[in-house]
Image (cartoon, rainbow, N blue to C red):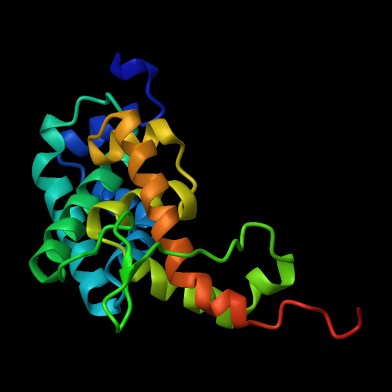
Length: 202
């Protein structure tokens, strides 16, 4: 993509020329979104702040290699996602496949059951408690699935932008997103099935 066609062209040129005000502008315009992404990926403020710092340090060090094949924001998302994934992989526990059946106390294997919360009333989904439960479930996703879900379903990137940010194929993004949604559906099934889903005024 020719640099002149990019809306970031002027800022990139200034960054590559070592303009300190351009560095400040890059941080000011993107720090909020990168921190929000890092917080949702890492689940705590300390790690999120570390990822935020790593992201901009890496960006500043490698800005000369930025070729404007993607937007600056997508490039920063990629750096932040990689930084978060590296941290998550160092402390991630063993994960269980959603395709595997559950084992009861008596040893009998049974298929996993999902409560279908796709069509819950909006009030139930918007409750602070429900939102907090959702984010706890997101934090329990494997790192590779969490990054796709956060970028695609929470940050609102398109499938193509998510693929670009994570350096994945579009088919890989779709596959991981489906697996992430299935795991969330499983993890949230108990909460939503027991929640007050019927209005008292009904």
